[in-house]
Structure formats: structure tokens, C-alpha cells
Amino acid sequence: MSTRTKAPALVRADLAERLVYRLGFPKSEAMDFIDNMFKIISKSLCEGEDVRLTGFGNFEVREKKERPGRNPRTGEHVTIAARRVVTFKTGNKLKGRIDNW
Image (cartoon, rainbow, N blue to C red; front, side, top):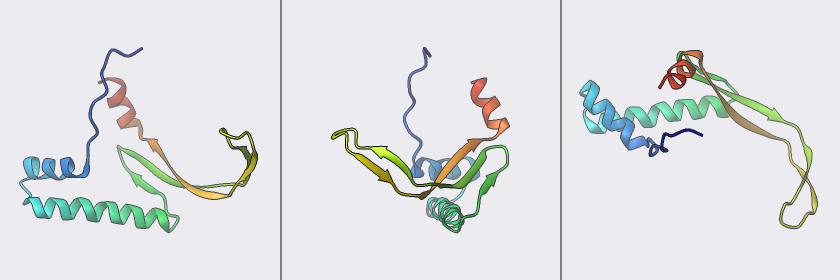
């Protein structure tokens, strides 16, 4: 069991603050930059494109087939519909940094 406590989540506003602090962006431009970056990534994924961020990781769209399932509350057997999902796989550089943190 790890002795580290769980850190609070990094949110969009925190990312913008870091751009302001580290790169000197005006706050409104930093927020616009973050918003646009996420819009571009989201649009690419919605269009079925994979997003590869070197040194960070890859977001990939996968097709999941229809499959049998069960409602855990009622025990009723149901069919889980086919769907597209986004997966994330860390890049080797990020894995190494996390392992050595």
C-alpha cells in the first residue's frame, strides 16, 4: 500500500494559472488557450481520430461490440449496446516520471 496521500485534482483553471505564472500569458488568453486545446482534442476524438501527445500519451477511440450484461441491482440480464469509447495510454516518458516520483 502506498504511503502517499491522494493529491487534489488539477482543474482547467489551475492549468490556466500555470500558463499565467510560468509563461506570462494574460489570464484571459490562458483560459482561451486551454479551452481551445480541449475543443481541438475533443473534436478530433469525436471524428474518430487518435490524439498522440509525444512524451505524455495517446487518446484512442475504440469500438466496443454489443455484449451481454447484467443489472447488478435486479440481476436482470440485459444487452449492453455497441459504443465508441476513449481510452488513454500513458507514454513511456510519463510512465517513467510517475514511477520515479
